[in-house]
Length: 460
Image (cartoon, rainbow, N blue to C red):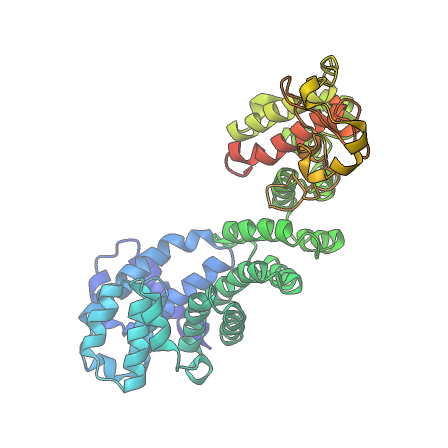
């Protein structure tokens, strides 16, 4: 087994990292593949949640870099050392070192093509890297190298060929289970599944990640993708499935995830999801509730800020401790209070009705010819007419359900002619045009759609 084979070298390296005087000598005495395998072991520990191993990773990268720079052509005749060079590069190594060492190695054409693809990848040339690596099958390579190659190819193809990318990431996991490679492959699979709209794959990859790598130092990236996925795929992911995934988290991480979901859902106008996430954040676990968390109170209030219980919402907003909120959430609280205030504000006085202007006698139409001149195309545009296109949209670009049509709230110009057919609602009496509550609700939804422009970072 790879882990057992490197245990003793790693113990020695742990001592050397502390500044042992013979560090240079011991480093020169180790083969490149031994150093790189030790690096992989440390990275696997990091993926499993051992954050204390992070400094050791940096030290091993430094030692492996120095050893690979001094390795000569004879060293690279050993296939294990050449593979180690490429694995080092794909593990976060120095591309200059990889390129210089490759020039000294006399390998077969496929190995050199693989090296070229890795160097292009490290130097930010994705097009060239894809072309060089395209014919190379990760499953045909030794597992230690094939796993990294599958991860790199999957990452390169994620944008243009997401289905192929997901297949390659599966191969990476198959070749290297329980390692940093699998952690990265799962994390990237979550994001690709969201972009694909694949709710089943999103839920599966999220479940596997939480089960195995919740304490990885890279888990914050997973959390970002997870929250975005829940929002984007809310129509396809049940609340029960969401609860199943978060139940595997510790209580503090679960609370933060639900707070972030509630916040995003409130901004997007997903009131049901926001209410569910806020309730779960308040509920807590193991007898520890979070009902005094001002963020949970704020996000729960946002989901009902335009509901029939607006007075209760205003009371809740008034009890929130502003000093415990971030700057962004204080702005959000101010906006919510302003919106709630508008909803309950007294209706503005309606302007007095103006009589329809009487046309001058020289423009009067004889009674005998009125029926012949009833062509609607001759009439001015009807005020108060309701458009068939939804005028209010959420931040996601989707029409807001049950939102009043802004085109129905027509401004009445004192100087405009008001010739209106009998079949159209009167601008003075039509409910869409004159109801101040509808007008206030329209302004409210507009403000909610724009709240996200003043938000700060997600709650920590």
